Image 1 (cartoon, rainbow, N blue to C red):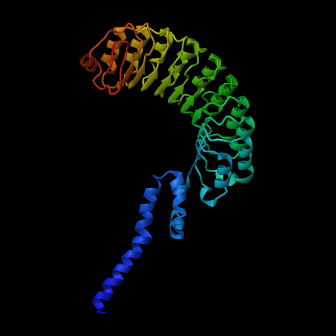
Image 2: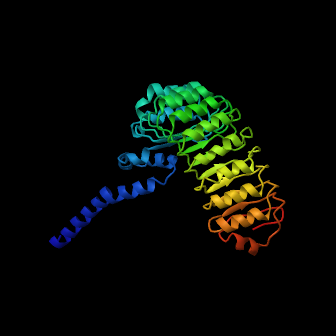
Image 3: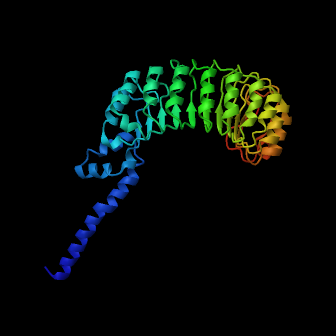
Length: 362
């Protein structure tokens, strides 16, 4: 074979080795980050070379997602026993079947090292977990930042005691539907998480003004507050929402005791982007006009079911927020008259979602 052809073959062989050694792993890393967990695990079985390549990228193994899966408790314990998951940061067990306290206790005894970097834990809908399980799992997650346990009717204030004792860095907390927690939990959260940014207390029916005020006084960095379907609060607490100068998202759906006075105080939250006033039946034009004048960055506003508002508040919103509002729901606001498609766009030119009342559809 001529020397020239031999050199060409050597060059091609070298290029192929470089392609396999450098280019393919880079491509795989990019593609793998977009694959579902099951597909990523399946790739490990394709070949020993691919197995080694994937395991050489720790960033691919930072998430464990067993949401809505059966036998999730045993799967979780088995996964965290594998070296590739020793630096996991996010665990999602939302509505996973068969997760019980015993599995969380197993994690504490067998997988302690694997949970030291955990930042996010989703236990939404895991209704077999009690205070005992929360004590176990929080004791091994020292840098946890996001904790969500929506729709758990078993945990009590004791769980929140364990959380604040063991996890000092929580900034995002979802307790929606945890009906057994009381003002004591809110006091613990307020005292231990002054840098809390996101809090969901939907349907926590045992809370009172006193507990909420603890949060409002001490968690001044809150950006999102969800107190949906809590009719026990009064203006005594609602007025204190004005202390949250960083607040962007506020859900007050069903706040039956919220008056125009309370809403006028909330209008001091000048950074509000989303405000849900659905079924806030005591509110009138006065309160909504205050919001329009104070919260000029509003993008989402729901006035659903409020019969005390009229065109006056709509005009005020158009005057102050027409450049920002993209979603406005006035369904059931019988005091707001019918308008054509063009008339609505004239008032709110950036609407990109349905706006409706009894007679309005966009």
